[in-house]
Length: 143
Ligand code: 8DG
Ligand code: MG
Ligand code: MG
Image (cartoon, rainbow, N blue to C red; front, side, top):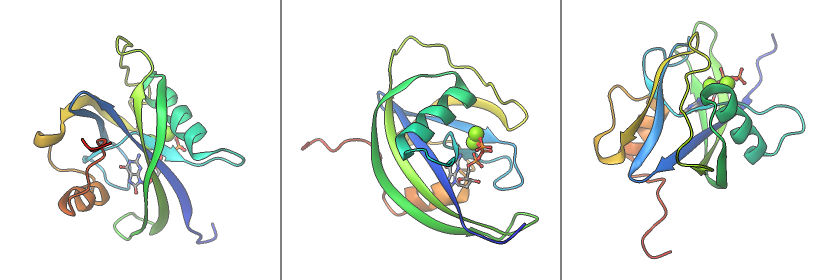
């Protein structure tokens, strides 16, 4: 396959002080905790992609989807190096009582809500870098 950058969309799904993370089973970032998300498909908006990936991976319906930031990363550790421009969104649950389901167990060995102040280790390295840089996905108090 031709070496080209691809577009990823990852979602900080926020519930109270917690965020949804999954333990990845993937050649990129295997056995690290990452945000739900996936590849932008032809014709999609970022928000449509985020909502679709959340539904596919977790069964959850989300709302209040907002753009947060974008990263540009080369993943040299995977068998075939890959390059992603990744769009980060934040969102809320449409209905807080929805069931969380791990619908892609071949790609994820477990999903859970984690306190932002006590994130699990190891985080997927691009996410770890964001956290280390002081990035915070929660709306600021002054909003
Ligand atoms: P798809 O077939 O469902 O479209 O893809 P996927 O298997 O769900 O893709 P993914 O690896 O979950 O996400 C696509 C890429 O986005 C990933 O390989 C690298 C980039 N990415 C980041 N940070 C994060 C993150 O925290 N979570 C996810 N899921 N992807 C991320 O740069
Ligand atoms: Mg996916
Ligand atoms: Mg995914």
